[in-house]
Length: 247
Length: 302
Image (tube, rainbow over all chains, first blue to last red; front, top):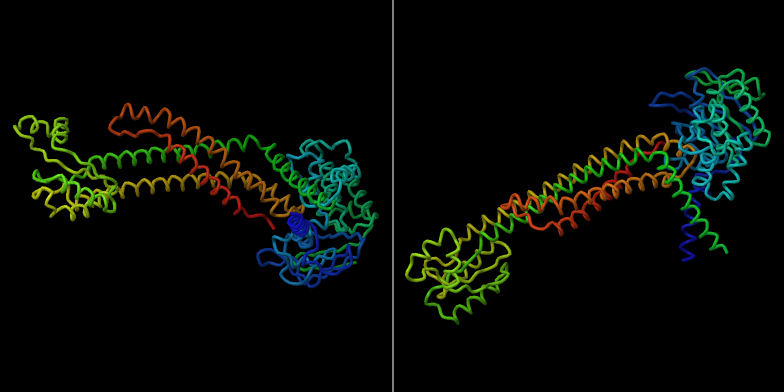
């Protein structure tokens, strides 16, 4: 019986966060893309794209609509699989992941979306707690971690509020809390200030700045000039159909 | 200590998954109840139709068997030893359940209760009805073997050895097989239609949860953990639908079938008790399997 339990535990651990065959050696917190071509339905949005981001770096991905900002983040997050090239994110070879393996990278990095992507029938605390309970099942004191993350984003008094009763800025801060609750080394953010007012936008940028200073690698897609001026960082500028990198 | 920690961890994880399932339902109880009621309605219709089909087929089979009572007519000169030997030979044939002796006096008494034969029975000075061996067949087509055996036996009537011919027996058998085939076919069609409707309802239910499934995928929830609530929901819908169908079936069996027996006596559907239990079990099994399988085919986003 203990053997059976150990085997079940090991199998679950492999599925829920243990090492997998897709792991490769790489600097923790770094991001590398080499000769990446990716797009939708055979039409490439990114073509022969190279990028290297050091651990702890803050990088803006900027460019007009259709330039491939969201596609780049989707490639990093395993939503879009590149047609060619390779992608390493925090030591994970993302380009190798099959559809059923993408939870590996999503447990490793945190991601904030423009549309928040909160579950409307769960409270703020439950939204932050859910990934800790289901995806990061080995997290000790998951509830304490979730509350700490919500405190960090300034929502200690909104723990039991549903997303529908929160403002856009508050919802985005819940999404940030969810992304950082498991203390990822890499944070991806796709237009995190796109749906919030300037006051909330400033607060969210201050929050990302703090997280970066605490050691997180941050990649943020934006076309908001206010955001670019609020925190100094390297800019990766994309052009439609053809990608160019500018430091 | 490590073993205890594993047990605690496994229990806690199972609790978290179950708590998530409950939270999923908490916000969508109204929609879920509506879907369960619709599935219950569809299963009730299918189960009710199946009950009437099964009872009708059973009644029809009994009536055909009663009408096709197979008799071997005995010669008036046949001795008791000869009749006994012939009875033993017939009973040993495959397809024969049992054989009973009917004397001339018993045949006359039965004829007096038969509207067609009563006149002959009352107007004859001597008893015109022969003694016979009444053969209970499991299948009317088995009459051919019995006829072959008795045709040249000295104990049987030389001119009319049996009540019907092997060809008539085969026709009866074919008719019964066809009736059973029709019942099975209609029952399967009802089940297929019920499964299809239930699948469409389940799919629309899952489509309504598409955003939720996408978010769960985005936050790194393992796919089996995402599928589990969907599977549980499908099974819960099937069980709830079956409960509704069972209640309907019980009502039909207790009230509608006896009413049909009273007002349409020639149908003679009989008691529905055994059939209701069997159909209830079949509905539960088939709906759980069908909806559970459907839920596993739901595509999750990359």
